[in-house]
Image (cartoon, rainbow, N blue to C red; front, side, top):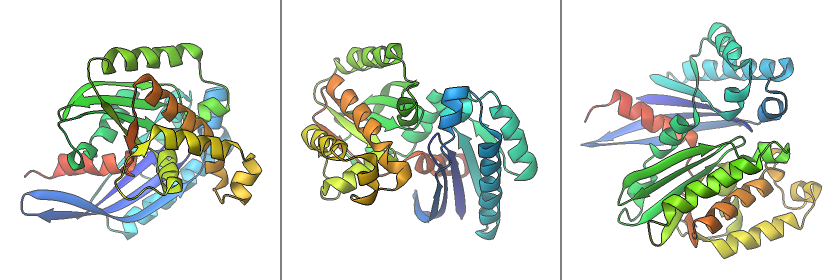
Length: 293
């Protein structure tokens, strides 16, 4: 059995094709193919609340290509989700209809809470000590999803319009930061020793740059040092000297800022980085939809 996940984010569009593995009473998946296309829809959506004809065309072409790959790989089921940029674009519903007509793909624009639930569906907590308290921190181009759970149970979850593209375009608002701070302080003060779980492309890259051993958490101090190190280079040198992709070299700085700020407000000393994201959660959602154990 094979499933496909499409994540249309504010910075990039991703396709994950995964093979489903059933072993007795457990179901898991193995990543087969992952494709990432840096369309950066958020630049249009957050500044103009409208996705330009050029980026709309690029998105439709990408969806046609994804549809062809889904057919070639003989995928049994798929799910396509669009997040913050498409939520804010006035022509988002029009683009959904065009994708359905021209690429023959059903695309869903999901709200922030559903986005958080899909990310949470990846069951990251199954691989760590579920007797402890954790704050999921998922940072995207247009939004940050926070989910707090204790003893393996979801305690509180909320989505905030704070993201890397939004910060670069000066579209983040002070009141949204204050709202996020209130959510964090109000909910985390009820628990002692909250640990962080970071998801998203930027924290995955930061973790690789940290040279931490697999599964070891990243400390606040080390993340802060990484931020200072990266910020000491110009954007050009982050690309040419450090070898970062152009679409990663600029967003990684505001991403660092968000993770560090959340960790500070929640008094988080360490953050686990399991290198999963939205597409992993979509695959898990498809498993739970289709497979009954």
